[in-house]
Image (cartoon, rainbow, N blue to C red):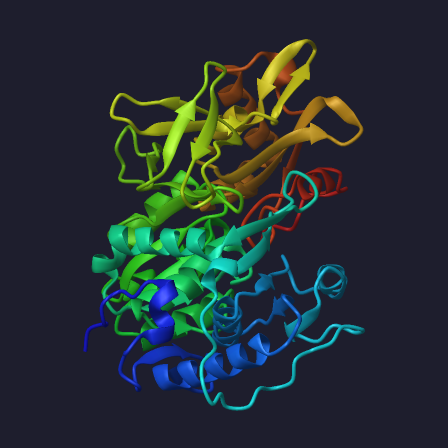
Length: 459
């Protein structure tokens, strides 16, 4: 049976979906619409009767998160969603909350399980808020408050853009739901669209493969870091008739990874550009064309590139004020745009300006390199180093000719585009880049890896 029509987030409380309609599943069982309605209604009535308005919401189980999140929205409260579930992070986030839901936090009151609601509270969606956190990849994480209307409008846009293609496919994800990408794509959008979702993140490729094969049709919500490893670890050809679409966000998908996935699955992942502050900005699918790296703005998003090349976003999913992204960009004639790297990732070496993203792009074009990160060397801001993940070709060359031969080839490639004084002074081979759970590369993690004493074993 196909899914029921899309229902806006704010109308779910009065939705008349079939009681047995599947909402979510996990390894132990499944949860239907009647289960979901009873659970959020009881929790919403409990919250509405209490004085606390700010709740820390932290659980690894996306269905339980969805229940408590929707209850908070109906009750007009604020859901404070921490960036991770480490004890120190939970304690810090709980310090600016009045109560907790989900994981316990010492010293903070936790709500008991609610009793069944005799009647539903009057919805207070206008007062509802979700407080999220930025990744902190370029500094300390920041708290970002979203209204329910902002999030609901973005969900409606996603369904308008891709809903027909997805149908009733079950939503699987390798990403957590406590970041904006996972919250929208793994929880809110499936709920509004009547599309079932798997309640646990599936970072292990074998667990993910089992759930894909268990599903008639599936949607995968992932990151470039996870997707880049899949072709070597699972039989992707078996997924081809089952996958409706793959989404990738959290960083750029390496061209080699996109092309490998396209060869196995018939289409490259749909990459989504965005941030906690701006919401979704743009999307692309690499198709092998000369302009496959170009991005197209999402519906409703207005973009501006100033004379200095800085990209700014005005979006209904983030309020009405234009926001600087910190990215350099340039227009294509057809209205799409190319990203040219972070404006804060330009360094000066021997008086010459070096755009680190441009050097990364040139290195990534070499057949031996799967992924690369370039950064100033710790303690030596006038020198740069490169972290490199090798392709199968690169590993073969390393085994046959040694690292010196690879470094010579990389220097020759870069020398076609950069002055010799700008070339990396350190080449560190790693099995994977030090990405966080969002797929982002924290600057401190890159610097720490470059400061390490040895190359990683690559066998």
